[in-house]
Image (cartoon, rainbow, N blue to C red; front, side, top):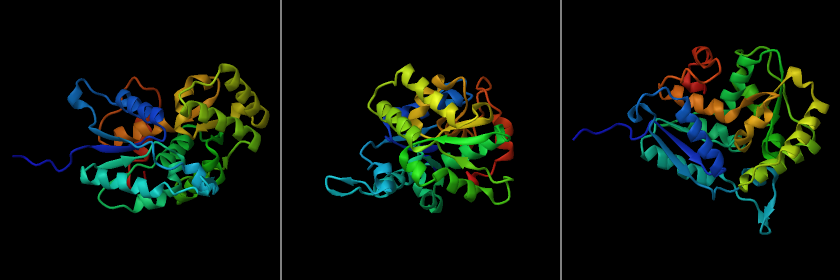
Length: 270
């Protein structure tokens, strides 16, 4: 009997939220150049919706009269499961969960594909002359997850260091409500999205700004931002999974992916 060294090419720790996890899987399949089932990536998807809320923990909120629990304990258990299944890589389609990225990067025996890091690199690669504004959860905004990654990945490779901006508190409140709607299974109304875009245009010169969809729920409504220059973090993660698993990017997918991965080919810095 032939023993396989790995059961899966990669593992996904999902459920934050479930629809966003499904969207990552859909994008990963569509991004893979394949002519048959067997040419696709073998993925193990752990849909774990009971992982404690990342934003509640970061903001120090209280749930049921007690401090919000850390999500890291349960995330650690999922990583251990993926290691036992001999996954070569693991990814987490939740930007806010990257608050713990330094822990993920220290794990041995399985390589972490850092969605935030890759999204920043791709944004600078595609739009080097534009300002960067991140649309995200209150937890991502308060802990400045994207700013921390900008410093971490720079190391002289991105010059000058990209400046990460977030919308004002009032706009972030609108974004948070939209994210909550999507998590509850609803699609925000066109009027609500249009109101958000008007507010964003009032704060930023949108023609010279690239907006990072820094929450995977927002990836479900990318078509509503067609008149904005955007980078979808879920899309970048899907492409990074395909590249990490040594598959070719589907030629019909727009984006300078081949050139990007030629420049950022070191998996250790994903």
